[in-house]
Image (cartoon, rainbow, N blue to C red; front, side, top):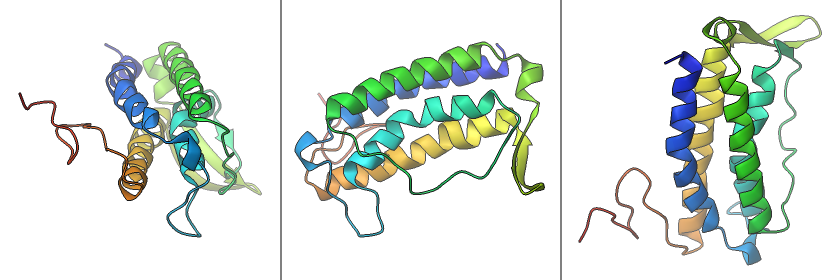
Length: 167
């Protein structure tokens, strides 16, 4: 198994858990935010949905300028979020499948005004941003759901609302 194939396998395992979390997002509360500095529920959910596809775009280039933070679109519905997730995961899997181990070791850089701000092998980008960053925001989303009294799905075992191991 190639390095990138292992990430595809992880996407196959984590995609359904992410979908279950996003299915719980109440469409009538997409504008809600827990704090003035926080993303809205809809922005966060759409960010979770789109992360694999966005990062797969980065995996296809060697250098980009610094990203613009705080430019997260507001979705109109939970259905829009779920469609974005499906598209995003499929895109990421296709990009990862097309990368060799040699491609995975190529450097990815963020450069501004000729100055390198960050550099890492693409395999590190896939781990740190495609997957770990994705899980971080999915965890944030679970807190948003809890604050809205929406049952939080079990992800890596039981949640306070669900126990898939119980009879």
